[in-house]
Length: 430
Image (cartoon, rainbow, N blue to C red; front, side, top):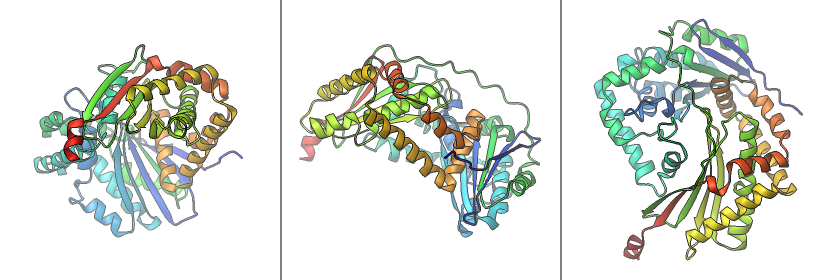
């Protein structure tokens, strides 16, 4: 049965794109806003600015006091947060229907009138918050820099994805008030923004509410076009990075370039990773965990990205007393076998079923449905993708999956990031 979530779209005179998907099952509305700026848009020496702005956007604006955005919406029973990624920054709230106008007013004030609140004091304060987040979530967390290591090795020098969203301490320290203000003027504009409403609101009422609050915002001068990102081919020879650290056990990450997201080839590659290591019945689980007991656990994942390439990886926890070389050799043997033979009928059926389950599970949640609509509207101009994605998945057969694995998941195309236990620290702890 095809999906038929209602999708209504409109573009305001200032370029803001609005999507409304009405759902009157519960008296709440999710306001999900995607801004077309992520870490991939940061200039050299300015890493971390997109994520820093995620924090600054909650520190007040022209008509909103510091901390008031959270307190007002939470006082109405709302849930509020934001995230930053390579391709976008996302601000979202789920509120009772009666608080929709308040939510849109607060969002419009900070998306159009933020800089009065971006003072040196607020910048210094939030810079320190972000640096502490980096220490806690990356630098002092076991395996915390795994994604940083993978993107640095998988993507070539100068590629927009080659540094993590958190940025570097040095770049955060050098971010001046002038630089931060310029970043806002460059990226925060209606024409670079998608506002999605999902929930207890009709399309016409939703469009009118967004027009009321966001319509008066001006777009400013046209943004410079984003430099094109050429499609990347697979890596031609293995790359390795070893980290010797205080970690619970040895762990391997095998990373791969994948095709750009929103394509059949990316979806086939994601299904290949599922069949290889993303499911408990996958062949790497069967061999490494349950069969030869070389690993205590593993996972596989594909990250859909928009600029010329995506990222896939397999993560393997190495069992005590087993060499990482033995584990890596076994993974490479299975990659080679899969690229030659493709998935078995059971593996393909399981991967397809899991993909369908996870997609339907996401769409069943109002806030996640809004996020997916914003995603495919902003990055791919395809708000109806929430309804058509499973049709694309259903067209993919075993040969498509085998061909994708043979192109993108070959052992010779891997990046290996090895986290190795520091023997001296281990012995000291004993």
